[in-house]
Image 1 (tube, rainbow, N blue to C red):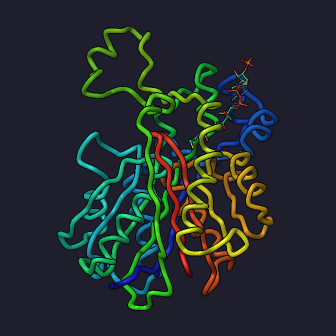
Image 2 (image 1 turned 180 degrees about the horizontal axis):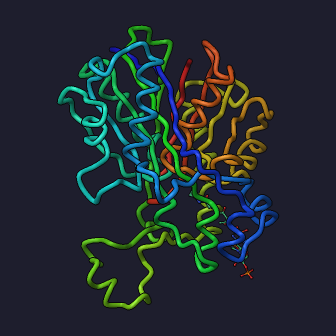
Length: 334
Ligand SMILES: CC(C)(COP(=O)(O)OP(=O)(O)OC[C@H]1O[C@@H](n2cnc3c(N)ncnc32)[C@H](O)[C@@H]1OP(=O)(O)O)[C@@H](O)C(=O)NCCC(=O)NCCS
């Protein structure tokens, strides 16, 4: 049986930085509240005049990842694209990347698992490689949140949290089973779908109905029961990390680097404390980017790697929790 290793990493965020003070000009919020509750100082939002979208940013990040892998676009066998903010209702962003990068007519799928999107995407790609079906897969996570947020005081509990950006990696076949993705662990609990949701537009609630509501139906903005999400996140993060460690006969002391989905710095700090991890063992960058959902783990992993924080033979743990609810972890021997 084959195994899969990350051979190239890249990320892209739009230039436009939006600080907490900038947000306080749009809504009743302030830097102190946002930093204290979430750890976020600033985020990148695509400006109105830009051509960036989830697919465009994903393609930019993918280009860097392919270059760094030493491969060319013609060596890629398949694309897995995770996003909750695709350019179109359909088709997905994966096929757009196939076109934007002028790749051969390889297969492409979109993964719709929100904050757990990258975990699901890399796990999916890993299975295609482990079975021998593909050799090199492009895995992308990208989000264009800013255009879909309620930037008034009504939406402040959600709008201040989310940022735009993309990350990508190339996952490649290896015959060394001691290296690469050791295991991945995926979960869902649809009974809480309504706790973090964008309900419209949907086939259930189509655009003419929203228009007919004359602004009273705001179900096209993300709704989040923040406290409920927080309480579930800290439990599920802990469970799924332990599940991954146990599967590989590892303990928290074996973790060289933990990269949590960047949901909220307080969630990451809770998990860090629970597992007794030092600051060097955990990588956070939510301070600069906010929550970029499916992009957050792969942007963070790329930054950590660029800063020399991911080394050969390191045990790297990725974990996420989010809308669905969905959650998961991936254990990597680098
Ligand atoms: C969203 C979150 C930061 C809110 O923090 P919280 O401590 O739970 O705060 P609450 O929602 O209870 O709100 C507390 C008060 O702050 C207010 N508030 C909400 N957003 C605000 C903002 N941006 N600025 C200022 N005040 C704000 C609320 O209206 C509320 O006021 P009230 O007490 O007068 O009613 C927190 O619940 C959270 O991080 N949840 C998890 C979110 C997450 O990770 N989501 C991504 C999916 S993984």
